[in-house]
Image 1 (cartoon, rainbow, N blue to C red):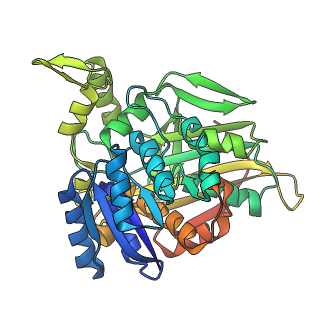
Image 2: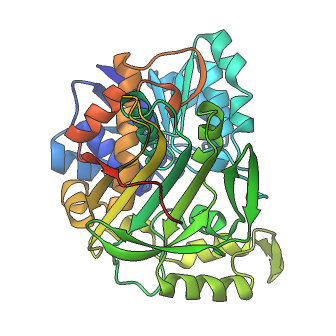
Image 3: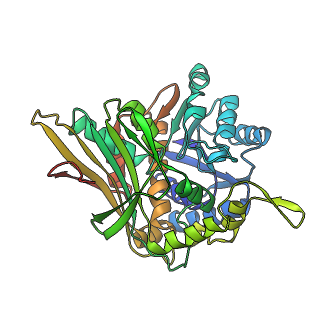
Length: 403
């Protein structure tokens, strides 16, 4: 059993902490900290009611390095699980280096003043973590995270090489709100409104945001329109699967979401540059985030399912020529809420964060330096998905996708 300190108190953190408490043989002591201690306390109350496990809660500003160091020295965890905002990744990594603590996150660092999704800032920490004998695991959510592990499992068990890869993220849930995001509004809207990019023939191809749309029939959900986007796992997969000719990421959105987002963009509410309002500076997107429904409040009303997975084409391991496989998970919003009090979007990210932490704490995954999840052996992670609420299935398709 090991001590773990979780940073952040949103829906993903709530799921991860609940699932950690359900695995006390791995997570012997859990501490939870965020800028708002009341949010941590609410999660702790739910965890106690659902599992009988007690967790410690603290208040900390993750961007304040001395405060983070002081908290880590007080708690003395073996691992920091960073489920705070991506802006805070580097500060938390610095605190881990200063205290000799292992690190895990679910999303790559991005600067506050620019919608820039790149791993370069965190990859630059590799030598420092290696020299300290520490491990930092990046991207242990669903996408990035499970989708990367899916690709590596296919490469280990089905395909000698992966030539074409499409990651499909479908949320078929209905939360009953006119407009709401299923995870942090500021991060979600920055991500959706950024230019789309995909990997093709050794270079990045950029297209306008939400400009390329394809219909797709998702098992358990039905037909949905999905849009080409950029997602950070494309960058790491292009690095660690060097034979990739093309890699793309697709996400579904309903017409109402697109209409609301278009209006908000047109009136400037998605901007990240400060504007003056009544004598003080505000960032429009941060204000919008403050007035939108909180993702962690949507669980009670959300119904439907998610379907997230990989379609990969490449040379078959058995020498039978080129084959295409579809590996995916279907998650039910109501089942996720019944178990943890959170909807499936939080569940599908929080459970893999817990599993990645379990891999590190048990020694199933080990290393010195900064690693992306696709560099690890997929088998123990895939096995734990099946026992922890995210069972997966794989089927062979007749051929590569037509879109």
